[in-house]
Length: 253
Ligand code: 6PG
Image: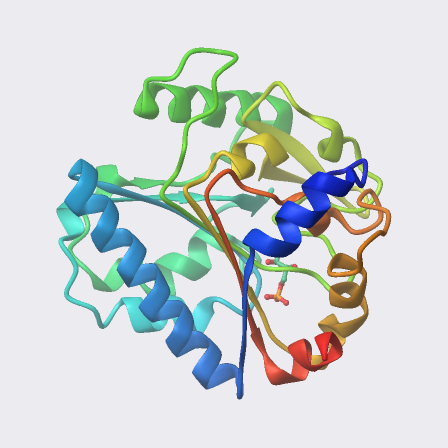
């Protein structure tokens, strides 16, 4: 959805996105599992590896637990994070910690294939630059270019944020970098930028619960303030999927 509400971009967004409303959270997670597996296998077939960025929060945890039960070619998978709270991986709020406990600690994925966001620098901006360097090195893309991850998983907050792109924050405006420092109520976070997310081959939102209805109504409205509802900024060059449970999705009619 174009930030400036450009009509053609809005029409494209309305046409191109795939929206599926599932009966409940269990069905939502199952659909997300099937979609992610399909995209990862297709990437491996096409390019020999698959790159996946994880979202944080609570919704994706059962998806990660389900992925831990899969028989995937783990040596062909590379895991990144789309955002991270600025805490150690041992902290209960850590997105890295959650994904490792739910999934990555239980499968034989090479340790070098897990690319967590660093949170050990005293200055989060230094950590953001370090992760940007790591990603540029991995994808072999120079400054000014944006790599295409195969799959980027996203959640959406009750306020319409995604990753750590919070309403009316400076992170929403960053167009020349891959990684920036997000800000949630004064707390620093690391986050993929909008242009990095929008370069993905496939972006999958996984959204559950009635509390998401007000933001979803704004995000799917023909016009609304994208600075207020940052998920409106997500308009990838590839596929865009919105997987909703009925509690969240019923607001869309
Ligand atoms: C995080 C996120 C964030 C999350 C949403 C939804 O670090 O918290 O990545 O963007 O996806 O806040 O969170 P829930 O899934 O807990 O509703």
